[in-house]
Image 1 (tube, rainbow, N blue to C red):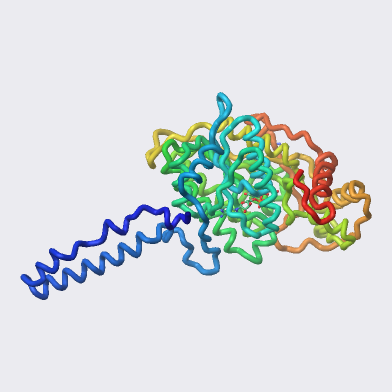
Image 2: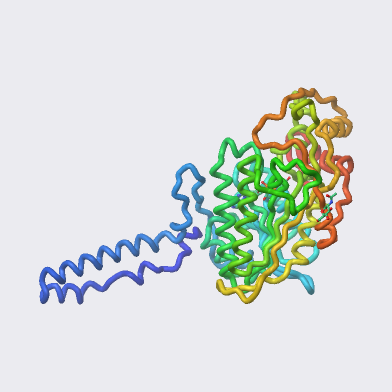
Length: 432
Ligand SMILES: NC(=O)c1ccc[n+]([C@@H]2O[C@H](COP(=O)([O-])OP(=O)(O)OC[C@H]3O[C@@H](n4cnc5c(N)ncnc54)[C@H](O)[C@@H]3O)[C@@H](O)[C@H]2O)c1
Ligand SMILES: *[C@@H]1O[C@H](CO)[C@@H](O)[C@H](O)[C@H]1NC(C)=O
């Protein structure tokens, strides 16, 4: 059933019984006629307005992605939602995971489910990268009992419905338009998901009763042109190097207002270059692997004066531990129905690995694991949003979350390559 079919039959409320008006018409002539037609006109406007429940969330700018219509609703659907979100351990939490078919979302959902928490996924399965990989992740989650609702975080009626069906204690918000370079091609998608979508989600959370605590993904990209390393949470983040970074930074500021005004408990996590099995094909470690195996030349960027480009690569399992620790230490929101009872928790943490690795070393490790020599082409780092160096100071996360990354790049890439080869073996997709 489409959510349009699922809307309350409000138009009926505004249908007018015409007979009294017709009766009056005869008595009062033209004045009554005028009143009658203005009521009809008003009625038509209201009917038009209430027929499209998502009309206020439809983007008016045609360059932005419009909301697709997804199928949701109905007793069978609600049953699946409830069953997926059902808490199965004694002190478990119930979590709505947005972006659940994404790289990080899949791993976090699986980890929560494993320890007995209730998990419901939400994802729009967009085609920013191969949607069949998202479908394969969905199938993986399905087998462990996690249902992913197909929909957009901009869809307010859908989100409200989910909170009506399940009293989520937590939201793990990972749905976003990721990627630095794609922002030059499709800026609207960043505004749609990272700004408009975030605001829509926070609006629904604000009105939910009880209000959930929210943990969400910001990005190390907020450090932008900052050159003081390692990056600490207190460092300046007002010089974004890409539109992606700017929307992530905007998200942190938006989070502040919802915390301040509405008492939402909010934790922002600044991830540093996450990699691992089921990863994202748009990231260098992933397409380097593909291109090395194909014998295709790979571009290796270097900074000005031949300075190496390096990244603080963080293995997915370490990121997952940081996400779970954030959920577990999140305090309750302090407002409900838009009324705030007291100050609520507001945090931001770096989640990195604290050991930057030059991209040339990344390639050398991949060559060894794949047993294929890479065709390297040294190229100057274009000014399209990528920064030269990232390095996380994680002492705050260490202190507050007990966060301690344990996987080095060698070990992590070995696991990635093993997954990659089995997933893409012979062009057909394995599932493990
Ligand atoms: N992977 C990294 O290295 C990294 C680094 C820094 C920050 N992050 C952030 O972490 C989060 C998760 O990243 P990821 O690597 O898993 O990315 P991903 O692209 O694999 O996952 C994001 C998921 O969100 C979904 N999505 C996008 N817009 C949506 C919308 N409007 N409504 C519903 N679903 C939508 C996509 O279909 C996708 O499945 C993102 O916020 C990203 O910006 C990731
Ligand atoms: C890391 O950040 C903490 C504050 O969170 C600060 O006290 C410490 O000096 C920083 N370390 C470095 C090496 O910059």
